[in-house]
Image (tube, rainbow, N blue to C red; front, side, top):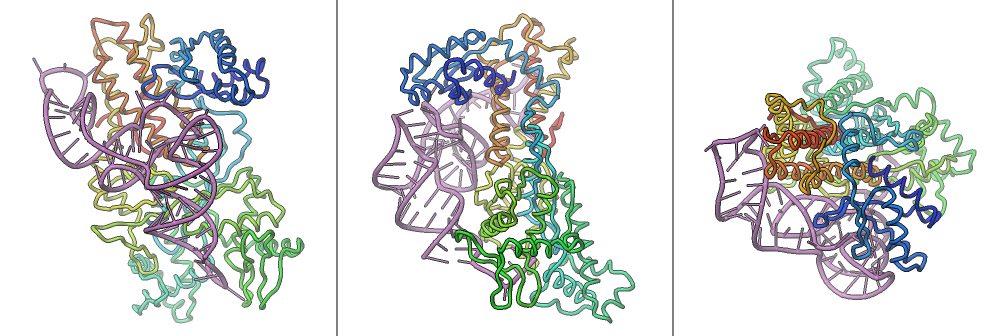
Length: 534
RNA sequence: GCCCCCAUAGCUUAAUGGAUAAAGCAACUGCCUUCUAAGCAGUUGAUCCAGGUUCGAUUCCUGGUGGGGGUACCA
């Protein structure tokens, strides 16, 4: 049984005494200095809530638990619980089976779209994208592990001023002229200019900026796709803004809003009214007749609703947080359920090189690309690094330190634990053990030390749920470092392969199989490899 | 001005309102003839300030202080 399954079962039994309050029951991992397998604060909560004596609640719950074969003891309000080793045996067998044992049926119906990165197609991907990509991809993996159907999408703003400016910049590069001051100065356009076809001369003669824009966008998207692939991130769909216009969706959205009397004209522009002053009024159509990004973005989000998603998650950088109220207001005014829409904000990454904090600017061409970072370190190191931080961390990325640390990164600590286990498994085969066939502790009774490390893998499920609750994968990374620590320490203290004791060897190989599967799964979820040899 | 985020060890970061606040780096002391020393054992070391809520606050609320970001008929 997994912790969740045990919890559900106990809750059901507790209903007899506490009816709906039984839902408040939960199991937690006890702190390090407590030896128990699990603990619960149920007695504290319920005695307080229903003005009962804590002893009374305690005796009821311990009856139920002991009927299930669990020993209990009271400890300053908490109830500590001890499992029979059968619980762990079954759990380890489940985790090594490779099946998705953490899937919950109620998650299966929650069709989720996760939109992230969505960088403008005006240049290669840089560090901020690395942060968003790590977060989004890992989160999607974790959600899938829990049963959510997740669809990953990348939105491409291939329309608008910036695209025109991109075209102008490329044409300038092509003609060997000065790039406009407001244009894109990065070297990548020089490279793209070299790839321009023969007809480009004609485009330039006729001043067909759009042709240059399209060429640049195609090339850049190609690079961005390669960058994402290098980073181990694949999207189910790349949604082009131009699709919205081909389908006339922004105009339809505008009509819908007018119909709902949510639009007013002022100074020649069309504005979205705001209810309850959630935000200022916002322009939908400018006085020059052009649609704003906001209107187009509303149309884009409308498609997410129309495509039948129950949970619409966007990952945005903190520089866009001010944009949330207007999106929510717009969605609400379209008559859509804004509760389905969640924006996950991650704080910006600034770059430190020596003592200098670099300000990144795509237009000025001064930025550190994702590709360069990955090539200078490794995909594993970068993904692990970004996944270590919570989205709310204001991260200063020290490039020199990152390069240096890529050799002393906790990543290797975790990977090393996996490789060590693989090596032990191999060695055991030479000593006539067959790890594949081992699926229980046999006659061996797990020691306190064995249990300590088993306990760690047992609580993996809680970590995954926490990641979804917080919409952040960083708990996994912390967990993996702790798990690897437990293993390394266990390894030092306990001889795994002991030819004089077949029972203990088999039991410990069994435990190691569980640890190995857990580490591998955890690394896989955050897009990091689990090498068998290091 | 208003809005969002942050403040934990010398540095970079963890901690569903729970029990003795956890790691890495840096410093120091030990451990490789035994399953991988990319490791282990140990020492030093921290919750910005003032109130409040709570049986219990690093966590929630209010007010400070100090940083980052936002506040366009840009995208």
